[in-house]
Image (cartoon, rainbow, N blue to C red; front, top):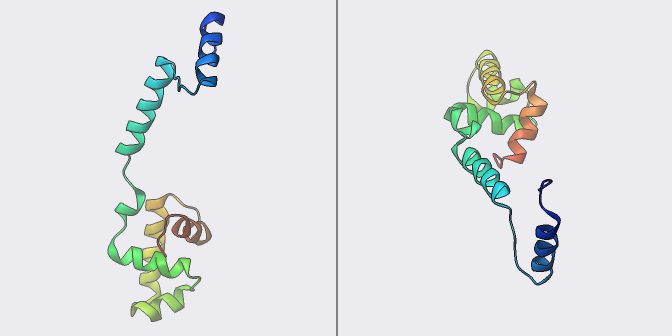
Length: 108
């Protein structure tokens, strides 16, 4: 921490050099608050319907709306509706971002 006393800093450095782990109480509190908040966040993929997940997988595999429609036996208009919904729910700007998101989050 920035406001640590010089003597305490020297003591902490020596403890760390001896293999001990030290974490300032303020840092511990901040870390626990951050971890708790992350664990309580809803996963964005949980908002998607089963069909939206299917469409997202197809997007990630590089298929066009027409190809997705054919593959899932739905109309192109329905695919466009699903794509719009996916982008809104995941707060993404376009299908490229959706494909990247899908790959990074293990959708494929």
